[in-house]
Length: 233
Image 1: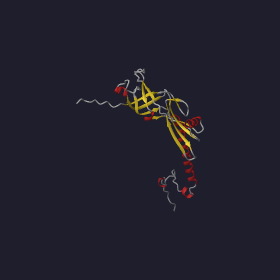
Image 2 (image 1 turned 90 degrees about the vertical axis):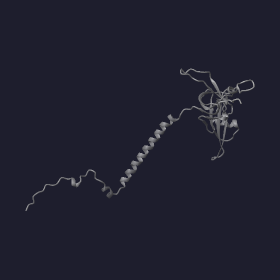
Image 3 (image 1 turned 45 degrees about the vertical axis):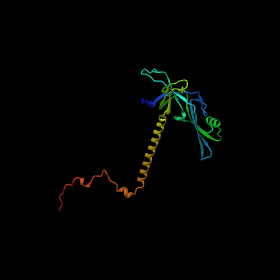
Image 4 (image 1 turned 180 degrees about the vertical axis):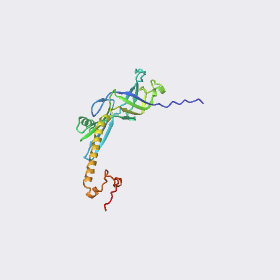
């Protein structure tokens, strides 16, 4: 019986790449900006206490362009395009809010045929933006061999992927505000404590105040003894 070689499992990878359009560049239904991927979360207000939420995302695949770099910083190999299907990926980015009545909210309402006041949270990945990706790298063409009647003709594909768009941290903006607020709170607590202590002293009874310890009064036993004097007859 001939030995059967098992194909190795696809490797798990983590890399940084640039977003490239798949078949064509897309347009966001909210902002109208060119992108390779968009996702919108629409909150449609029904009453003052209720709203209907719709979440819609683009389904067109796009690519992640990666090229290894050597110690000198020059490209060590040609750029590799990794295929990504958004429906099977977790794509994370900082959303942009379009408030009620804004052009982005009105454009989304027109694109999806929604009526009434609504707000939109929009996530975009634009062509050329830097992304951090991790997942399982599968290359079916390399495994079975590309040919006229087999293969996908699209190269390696990232499966079970998590893709993150780098964004600026809010820490430098929030830190001075947080420190200022803490200083105001601490000063307010100090003032309130001092006022309470002063009010307590003013309302103490006189007798109670008189029984307070006299820190600097000498104790009677510490006074020098009197010199004895002769008694006159």
